[in-house]
Length: 116
Image 1 (cartoon, helix red, strand yellow):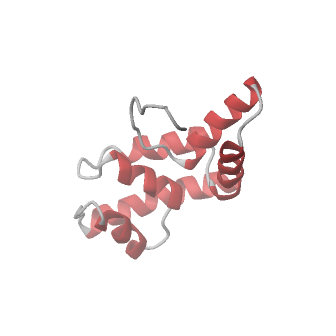
Image 2 (image 1 turned 135 degrees about the horizontal axis):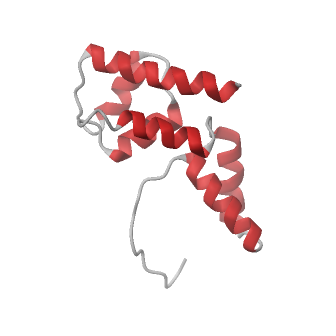
């Protein structure tokens, strides 16, 4: 990437990265880093691109949660309240116990849908 300028930055979930790389793969051969990234996405992405977008949209009702943290929640799909708190800690976001339980319900709904 020598000589390239970053035009913009946007956080992406693993499912979205995988989707983008699959499209690029159709256009031509991927470089080493792109192949490694696509392999990583295939192994660790827990949701389809559409389901990942659904989680992000469901989490948008929490005004306190920023976009980057919503993306982290999508990639992790937390099972326990402590996992949600850990994801929120970096951004110094404080949610009530009820809101944390709501986040867990959203994650559970999509986690179970992703298994089907």
